[in-house]
Image (cartoon, rainbow, N blue to C red):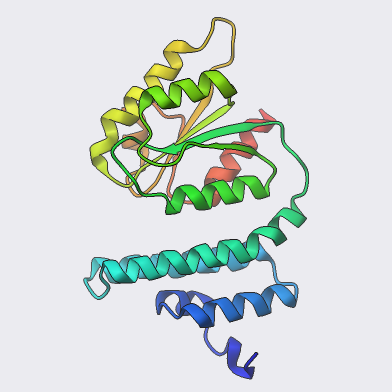
Amino acid sequence: MPNNIFSQPLPELVTALKEKEVHDQVLARLERGDDPMEILNECQRGMEGVGLLYEKKEYFISGLIIAAEILKDVVNLTAPHIREIHSGKSAVTVLIGTAQGDIHDLGKDLFITLLQCYGFHIIDLGVDVSPQTFLESFIEHKPQIVGISALLTSVIDAMKETIALIRSEVPQGASVPLFIIGGGIADQIFADMVGADFWTQDAMAGVRFCQDAVKA
């Protein structure tokens, strides 16, 4: 690898969409034993820079696509190392999908990868998932946590219906699952509107919520 591989901070490389340089630096840092979660956090900060440039119209959709591919690559590189650190298994099942009417999955997939690294059992329903599909999977797998992801505000009714439907079908005496929502639309007002227990735009914060739920 070139000697100047560390000449530019990782967040800056991500923001600049330098795919090969990001890949090479992440590999080199993993090889020397750097904390994989810190590497991932730095890349997420770089993604925030991409978002700001998109808002300023300095980046366009093509830039977002490249940034998403960079982050997926980083997740794939760091995931085995994170699993090695957090090798303990959890009996907790998390059912997750992107709300009906939305096909965005980058944040969902990152969240899933991190949950798997921490030993959670994941049922991934994919994207554009109807309330009925959520319900059927809930009945089949009986997850302790249900996660719903979305980027579009237009899916609020679908998210609200999903949560209400599952809650209404929980058998008497059984535990009601905790509901977490995530994505670009997530905030406290939105969570209150759809009836969620927790909201986040940070995948790692979502993992910590799930870990706390396990301890409760």
